Length: 467
Ligand code: GLC
Image 1 (cartoon, rainbow, N blue to C red):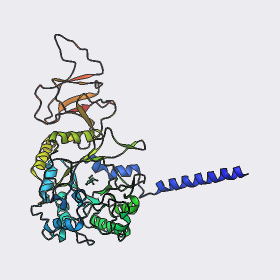
Image 2: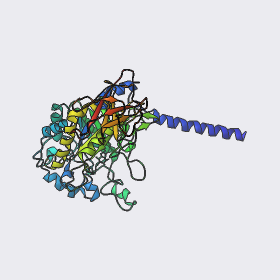
Image 3: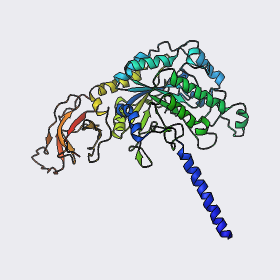
Image 4: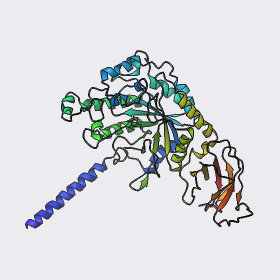
């Protein structure tokens, strides 16, 4: 009898646990079918290449956008940057033109980073560009207008962290994080995250109603694990996402609000400064993804940073992202005067030169279909609409490229940059060595001299029945 009771209790508790768990993942931000989601994200999946812009007061110290935290600068001391912020050369039309010339199709700007300074017009703090004595502009309004005018899609980055706001509870990442854990209570006694949550909602409402259609929202970020972190409860992420979706139903949102298990809580994943080894998956399904990358390590303008990636490395990042079904969001940290420095311009121009003739291997492209193996030192991308396959030659081969398993699948081959024909067929003749081509392989003839293109691309027009 007692044994039976015990069994029943255990069963009951088990059921309760099950209900709690399923209950948690049953929360839905909104109803949308997989097809509707794909349609909503179609422009983003097609465009593949965007510009990230990290701009704020941290451009003045010019030694990392986390300088406030790294050097533990108190709010009062950091205020000198607010007083002296003078972006007198700010011309977002120039920025937009440079982004467009580099082949970028969308852009995402920091409307507020962790330092708390707002680049947009807001009724909820004085700590904004319009009030900075030497700025006095809604920098975001001008930015949105300029980027739209160049035909780029516009996105807002908004930091969930705020090291300036008096209600934002001090946590382990905060510039004023205490050495002794016992001190958190004392430090936070007058801080009220409830009020901070309201602040975030109010500001997101402003951002998503003041500037017309916003294509993308980049919320940054959550760190719920461990002690004194923050996550979905701290931000009320579910409430935020519902608000965002209500104000801008077509918007695309990243995955940093700590809602990975909630349907509708995110649209794409964001490997940061990280090269994925394959198309990222969740629950066994491939998911939309975008890697964000810097030129030199930091996101904000860092005058003395030496780690600049070459144009070629940046191109490989772009091509490799598309080759694995993803996007690249490449970051610029403008100077405090509002300009892109010479190193940025040099890289953007280099990328633009390549994109000007090779963008068909990027836009609308994705991972190559199964059955197409990338030859050595190459990256493949594929356009499912036009059924063209692109071979990116990272290391220019001598005279021929072996395409294993491609026989019978290729109708025509050409360089992409000038659409000049490339012959293919049998292995070239050698007096001393005769290699039999395998029936399933193709040999492609290449000119000895590498074309004047950083990474040459071969365009293969596939046979209708190549699959
Ligand atoms: C990080 C950093 C930040 C940067 C961002 C971009 O979370 O805190 O400085 O804005 O990633 O992905």
